[in-house]
Image (tube, rainbow, N blue to C red):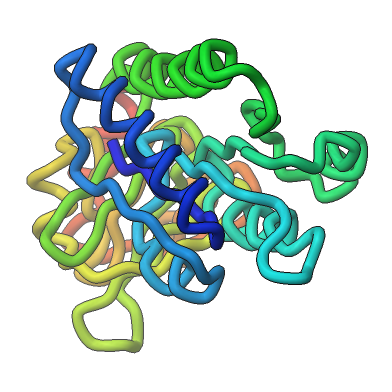
Length: 245
């Protein structure tokens, strides 16, 4: 789990940080990253992972901008459709406005709640985040983790992964997004044996193949995208696809 706080008021920052730490200690939970920021650009510059293991507590008013936190949430959601976002603010009147930003916030917590109710809402958000992690099985996700990258996407949406023109980088293609990250195809295959290599530059999800053109040596996916197939990999690839049907 990674937890991030964006709050520019030092008193509120300390209050929220201490409350979250108290909840983590109470449940004997640990975080890979628990980081606090006062400036939006610092937070965004340090968010390098994606997935349901990312939990953000965002103030809405930063400095003199009443809606800066909403803009930050929208940028987070653009980068990561799976992250969990909680607004913590004194501007409860902005709750209807937050829906227009289409960030799918988990909760909208008023700082002026009593300490007990404030703590309960924070705790509920953290419990939900940890339960989400436990409920999502490895079979349901493609998870790739190295020292330089951590990627999580639903396995059912993954189409293929290819090498990038940038050295040591890969590009993941899913049904609705494209993600570039550091890694090697050999590492991907080791971490998820459900994938199949069809070419030295491509690893594919055989469950999402719609058609194999032997003559053109091209593999087509359900969304119309395609990738090349090596002559040497053709027979093994056909066997892998046939085994699924």
